[in-house]
Length: 140
Image (cartoon, rainbow, N blue to C red):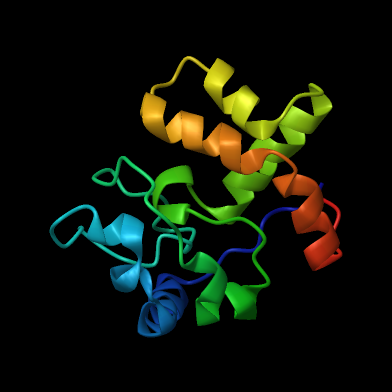
């Protein structure tokens, strides 16, 4: 297996500033539900990841973000679920164990999501993965 490519810290900062300039997180219902400014935006950026302050999902605008289109992302709710790679790994693990990703997350011992959010995730996930595969043409 090859070594991961190392990126200079200045390049990471340059890319982060570009992503932040396109970011629409501040207009998202989930971000607004926080009631105040979070510590940062651009949760989809690998150096950032999910918010420690946002606990409940109220809707997602990731799908209409310029960064989402440019990076050809497939998942969403980066502020509560983490970066694309982490979500895809959870999806792959759940598929390997032959159950939905949200059942997989629910079975974990961590308390990342409130019961209300988990209920919404289960409801939202019914058929979502197959629809996402059809829409994107990408097999995860």
